Length: 108
Length: 108
Image 1 (cartoon, each protein chain N blue to C red):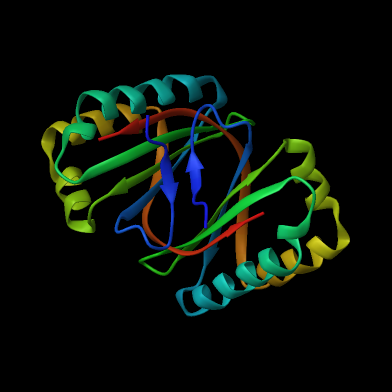
Image 2: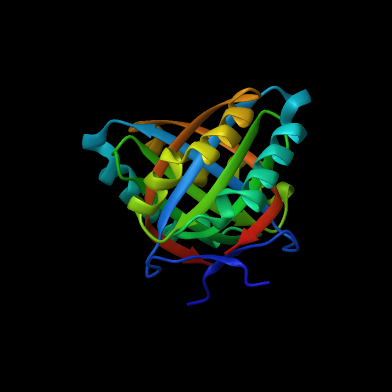
């Protein structure tokens, strides 16, 4: 599988969505987000990738996602079927989505 | 330049550090983090990569960073020279660092 790459050159809109969650619900949230991506969101126009992360302290889940454009991302957020899956996630956690540009990339 | 890749197989500890910032200070914070990475943090043992993101609404900066291990990351946080650079960032913003594992990766 092609890995997700982070680059200042990549022509993508980056969504970093930070979920604050109770540790006992963290793995349930990971499953909801994984299922939502595989079954619905990952089939929407403009979807590039999604990467679900769990914090080692149990209190956060982060989705690092890439879309072809901010417009494609907005269309997904407005889609009723996607909203249904997002409601399932929001029943488990609070979320804070922001759209980002990659400013600089550094390597050892 | 090798891009940063996100993978469930990668043997790295992932730090996602979310900075909450006033929009008029966002670009100054990007510069402080870029300089800190290039001059100090990027030369510490165990550093793999850092990727500085700015939210399009101006209110967040995210550093998506990879280290060879949680121990290497903790050693960096404890290093006085690194702390000095982090103080410069914390004069501009509040930060919320968490260590993560990659749970699942999805692609179009």
